[in-house]
Length: 283
Image 1 (cartoon, rainbow, N blue to C red):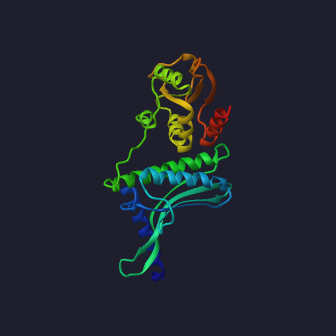
Image 2 (cartoon, helix red, strand yellow):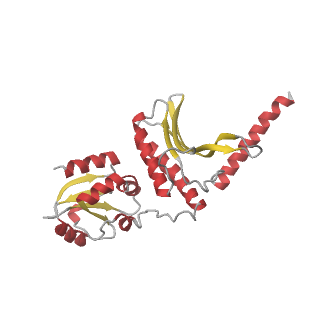
Image 3 (cartoon, rainbow, N blue to C red):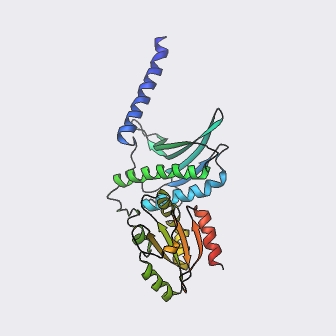
């Protein structure tokens, strides 16, 4: 009887040690020297649409690009997002994992085996009042942020990373921050103005910047067709008739008369905003 109990006790002890390591050190894995990966996305279960797979893959590719990790072609080291769901009574719990899997050599032999060399996860409960894609994106944000922080810390000599935040967004993305200067430039270049109004302590403004405006396809359309202008309405001057009681709000201004001919209110997903941009530029 005692012999049967020992493995269970050992398992409990190991689990406890792993939990303690994870809580105290942030991660029990190392990302030092990870220079190339093969990106993989797998969505299983019933509650997370498989149609989100291309979106998650693109987000994963953006992560590797921002960190300077080569993700072109095949590599024996995979960086994967694995999404699954589990039914618990009348609810579903979605688990989102970010893992690195690769062939490694055992320390006590020359034999190679496949192992997880990085493993982190987030979970959320599917709520009918919330968009599953939005909850998935929130989980990816958390996982990618922790991965980026650890990778940057452990690979300081590899690359100096430019992290775009609300403080350096305008400069890094080439947005104007002065209304009058933007108007003069718009008249000179004969381009309409895309005015993004944000405010202090606005989480949806930050999400709109990071999840939508930072994306390559979105930014390419903006830079090609508009004079982009971002204004913190609590700090900079702008025509007050364009103001509303909340943020973010995007006005599209005719460069000839400075009148708002269209506006996008509140947070819009990348797909929604891209749809609007394509519709506007095809007029």
